[in-house]
Image 1 (tube, rainbow, N blue to C red):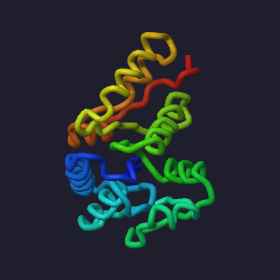
Image 2 (image 1 turned 90 degrees about the horizontal axis):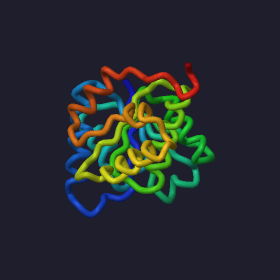
Image 3 (image 1 turned 180 degrees about the horizontal axis):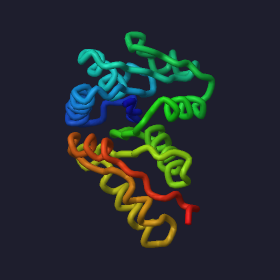
Image 4 (image 1 turned 45 degrees about the vertical axis):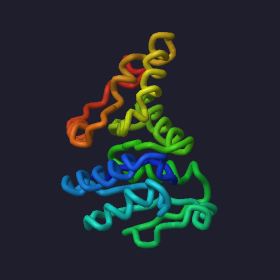
Length: 187
């Protein structure tokens, strides 16, 4: 199984993010889950890729030509795809992945995970989407999504389909046993 990891090109302000990212790499490696990610050696992107490589896991990166010099492409990974645009990057990662996990990151991380969540809601894929809620990083975001349900903008089913946990083993178990809901327009 190939798991896309969406995460920051920064390390964050607490060592818990780096430690938890290393744990994620270890647990995914134990299950023989390969990594697909944004191709950088910076921040948590570098941690997930380099730790996975240390564990002899297969790591595939997808990076734009423009970001090669800005994000310092990780040249040690198993395979790298270089594309022209961020949209092509997202499309290639989605094509290569069987599941998606967002760990802490900024706008790019949120944009990437919400793109695949919205695609799942519409039935364009039936792949599991997860938030690794390290240090409660995504707690307020999930509360926002629950409020969107309350306000009538998202169906409860489409928040419930998102795997959210601070426990790596739970995330991996739920990914392994995931069953997609009906898409938004399916009767």
